[in-house]
Length: 145
Image (cartoon, rainbow, N blue to C red; front, side, top):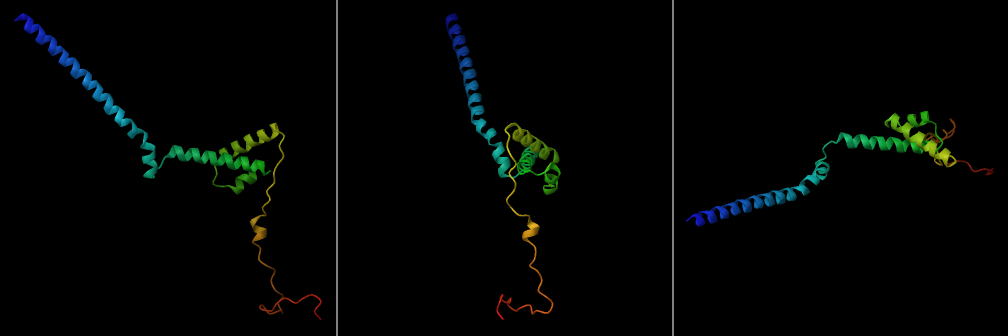
């Protein structure tokens, strides 16, 4: 009888060990199944269009640096760059302008001026017609007398 009791105790311990290992495996599998859900949080936030202040600040910083770099490359002064881009962060614009200035000095690059004309010259209205001429009359040809 003692031997039977001893065998029963051993088998009971084996069952406990089996249950413990199964519980550990189940916990591991549950955690493993939840990992993809945690990586999808960023996608879910973007899908729901929830505000992300850190991401917006990083985008504004990068945009300001790009604006500053472009202004320096085009030969614009820092003050002109501020005036042309009032919504950009001044510190970021300055950082971009300075880094491009350092890069251009280091590599002996020349300024590349803008080839576009200013909006004010392109949007000027045509010269008004003389007061005595009718508005719908075609222009007179040169030398047609």
